[in-house]
Length: 219
Ligand code: DX5
Ligand code: ZN
Image (tube, rainbow, N blue to C red; front, side, top):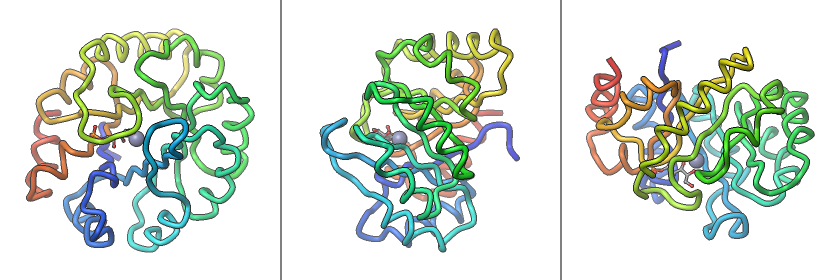
C-alpha cells in the first residue's frame, strides 16, 4: 500500500460517461474511488446514492469510499454497505448519535470514518477516535467540487494530527477539497495521509499524467 493514497471524487468526473470515467481513473493508477452522497438538506446539492455505488461496484476491485453528506446517515448506511461500499464516513454536525452510527458501520464490516466540516474543531471528534479508521477533514465547505481550498486548513491538519498522536491512535487523515499537485506536499508534511481530488484531477487530462504529477509532488 502506498504511503499516501489518491481517491478521485467521482462527482467531478464526466457524469454522462461514468463507467468510462471509472475505467480511466483505474487505468491512471488511483488507489480508490470517492463518492459524495448529498441529500439537498445537509448540503445545498443532490448527487448520487446506493444505486450508483451498486452499479459501479463490479467495475473495479479498488476500495469505494463513500462520504455521506446527509442529515440521516442511519437511514442510508445499510443500503450503502449492501451496495458495496468499502469505507463510509459520516458527519458529526448533524447532531445525531455519531458513535452509534460509527459502531454500526464497523459491525457491518466496512471501514468507518468521521468527516468534519472546515469550521468544526478537531476536539469535537476526540471521543470517537476509537471508533474510526480515518478522519475525513474537509478543506472546502461540503456541497460542491471545484471550490477554493480554505487557507486556515493546513493548521487544522497539523492540530488534528497532533491530537491523534497524543491520543495514541492509529487513525488516517484524509483531506477532501481543493487538493492539487501544488499543495499536496505541504498537506502531507503536516500529517495528511490520503487525498481526495475532484476538479484538480478531472479538469486536467490526460488523467494518467495528472496522477503522476500528484505522486511526484509527494516525493
Ligand atoms: C465536496 C466533496 C468533495 C469534492 C472534492 O462536498 O466532499 O469530495 O467533490 O472536489 P474538489 O477536489 O474539486 O474540491
Ligand atoms: Zn467528499
